[in-house]
Length: 329
Ligand SMILES: *Cc1c(COP(=O)(O)O)cnc(C)c1O
Image 1 (cartoon, rainbow, N blue to C red):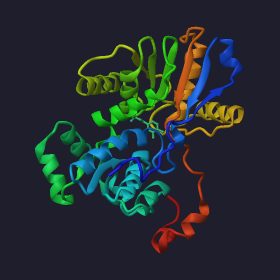
Image 2: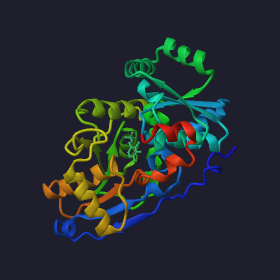
Image 3: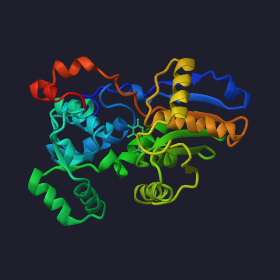
């Protein structure tokens, strides 16, 4: 089975130069690597990271994917859509048991529309399960399989060694990289950054911008661990900047919102706020502080598209009587 066929990705993803006089004054060139355009339902780094895992799941004879995420997880939606495309059933373990009886938000609705079965668990049970999986605890795995049957288990955010290798492939689509090049991306779990750094040619660097607050040390350790397990070595060509999370995951302070809106207006691209806006904000911050030497070329990885605009109509239409009666999410 050709794993790439059912999803019909747009690859290589387009690269677009950005004309930005403010950056040009500082000797910095900027271009966007539009991974957000790879696929409408499995976009960006989710396509890069999931594809090798889908192939592994099919090769090992799995018929079901099981994974984890929060109420608005891009990963959850991507797994639901990718699983449906490959004829694999999908289970999403969702953090927060209070969500079980709440009206479904747009993101979980989409996952269910692709046939994903959702299971809502308390934050503590969620954390315990993820801890067990990361420590290869056999009891945790057995518990999941007793409940859900045999399944290919993808960690939260979809990051594992295969995923990092998938992300690494985007560097092959940038054959002109070399000294003076800086590839920038947002960092949630670090899988994307790990893959990019491992694949860069000599002299190029990778900078990741953490979207979570208080992840200093932890995230850096995750990336280093992926390098150790996936490539058997360390890389010294990357770092994570923790100065642009805007107060934490999902937080978009007014200053960041203003930056993103200005960027959209000037450059005619819509900017996803939870990850991409923070990364672009960070790039400008580096230039402002003179941390990008004149002559640098930044390739900013657009890892995903913006969330859909709220659709107030939808609640009353396709949501079913239960959802409509309970109102907005
Ligand atoms: C999931 C996601 C990320 C985070 O990627 P990691 O590999 O987990 O660091 C970044 N940007 C977007 C748009 C995402 O959906």
